Image 1 (tube, rainbow, N blue to C red):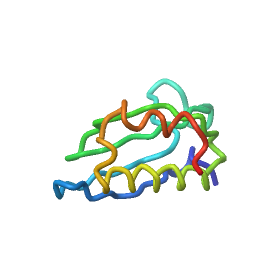
Image 2: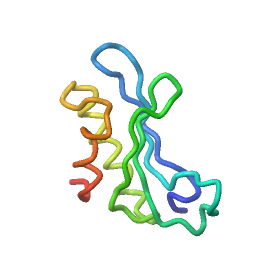
Image 3: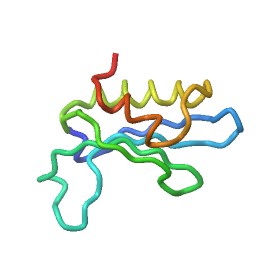
Length: 98
């Protein structure tokens, strides 16, 4: 299995009570089949719409790292240290999760 077939999804409860879905995986592209894509992105979905999306350095086969990345972002969102914005999550997407 890879992130091409199934995205990693974790839910965060923001300090204001809203729920945010953190997704890590190969994004949908209407022009290129997913099996041909190597890009892995992280998205934050609030109120049913994507509010932040950035590309990561992860490869589609790095499922374990994708779960770690999602958990780190969820922890930051829940603590209030991270805002649900692309600028806030970009530094996480540019390194391998710890």
